[in-house]
Length: 149
Image (cartoon, rainbow, N blue to C red; front, top):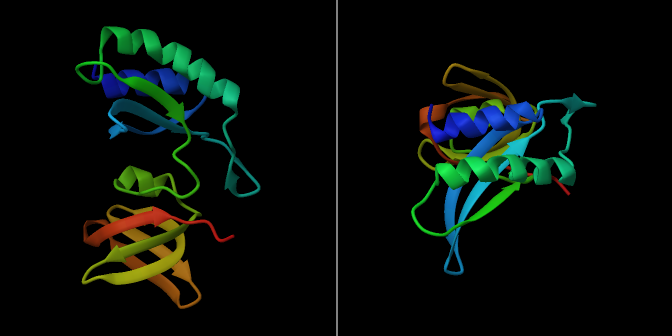
């Protein structure tokens, strides 16, 4: 099994869903970031994950990462939420963001702000005040969720 699938199994064992893993360098420090979300919904919104779940997951992941390091050299493990406003870079990210407001650039720098209604194969279906919009995932240049304050 790969490190990613091992991490995904541990995340599922605590009742959460793996959103993403990423290695970043900030202030001369390497960080291995594991982002998780709740698979449950309440009132049409994805439930939040409590701090105790992040701590538990950190303790479960640490021994695995001690044996199978995600990077060479020293790093810091961060387990948390991908955030209310987050980049969408994979089809899986879009599938996990159905029902959320998305801002994206596609095609020849066309911009769209709309609610993601469904993902059908590679087709992303959005709805806003102008109606329904379909965008091919391969045409997406940049996308992120956004929160209307």
